[in-house]
Image (cartoon, rainbow, N blue to C red; front, side):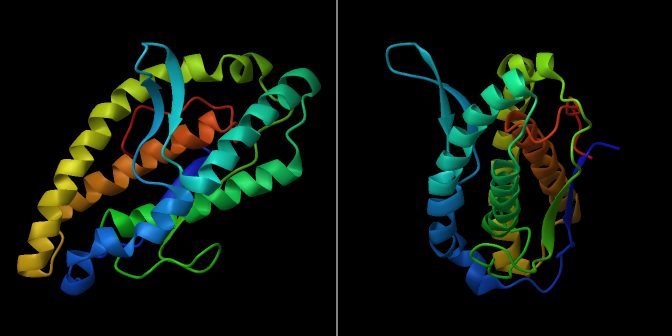
Length: 207
C-alpha cells in the first residue's frame, strides 16, 4: 500500500444546488491560501523551465520549505520535524479545499485543521532517507507531471459536466465521482512525493 492515501466520503445524492452554482466564488478564500487545481512545471515566456505552483500563499511557503528540506535531507539525512508538520498541515487543508472546489463535497471546509469528510493520511518515510531519490526528485516526477496534465484536464471537464448534473438533478454521476476521487488521489500522492514527504515512487493509478 502506498504511504499516502486519500479518503473522501461519497456524496452522490441530494447535493446542494445553490452552493454548487456559486462554488467557484465560495472557494476563493481557500484558493488564495492553498491554491487551485494545478501545480508542477511550466515554461517562462523566454523558454526557460521554472517551477510553477498554484498552491496559494501557504503553498508558496511550503514549496520554499521543500527546497530547504532537499538540502537538509541530501546532506544531513534530516527532514526537520517543523517543516514536515507544516507540509502535512498544508496538504490536509489542500485536500479539503480541493474536494470542496471540485464538487466532491458540499460542506464548507475549515480554515486550517478541522473535521471534514475528505482527508489525507501520510505515513512517515523509512529511515535512512533515500538520498538518490531526494536528489533527483523533480526529474523522477516528470513522467507524473506529463500524465497528470491529461488527468487533471479530464477531471476539469468531468467536473463541469458534474456541475450541470448537480444543478439539474441534485446528483453527482457515480462514475465521474470515482474518477474525480482517483484523480485527486494520484495528484496529491505526487505532490507529497515532490514535497519530500515520502520516498516511495507514486503509482500511475487512480486508486
